[in-house]
Picture 1 (spheres, rainbow, N blue to C red):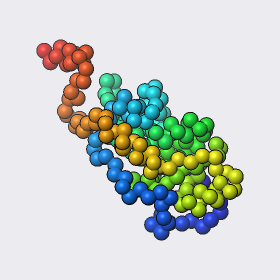
Picture 2: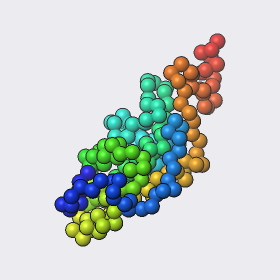
Picture 3: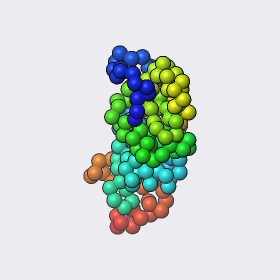
Picture 4: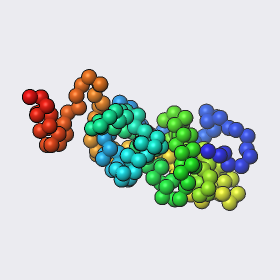
Length: 191
């Protein structure tokens, strides 16, 4: 991501956040959400989710796919990034810039991410951490839209509060079947 203007680098611990996100609390990191739940929370299709996982754009961190029939589990932060990617795509940001934004977000801790505002002019992505940086970017004619990560965080948090999550099983524990067909198959293989 590109820093707006030619200002000297400011360290996050000295700089104030653009939005007050002291109330943001991620859900436990060990809780995962299956693909359909992640899609509902991020506002994307399952086809998009699958494609982004296979191409490495957004890979599930709780449990990646490990072969045919395995279930990916996406964590809170994964779903946050999925929703941000969706918004960037909807506004016409190019895939290379989206990948750069995702890589940039991956380098940040949770608290650090919540204070970011991602701005774009459609061609480039900019990180803003203060109102002054947003104003400088807009005054320079570069900023067209912005995504306040803290606001997206709250949206995802609210959506996931009403959706089922699960703790991942270990490699030695079988995954419990979740539908009738899977339960029938499991019974047939148990005999």
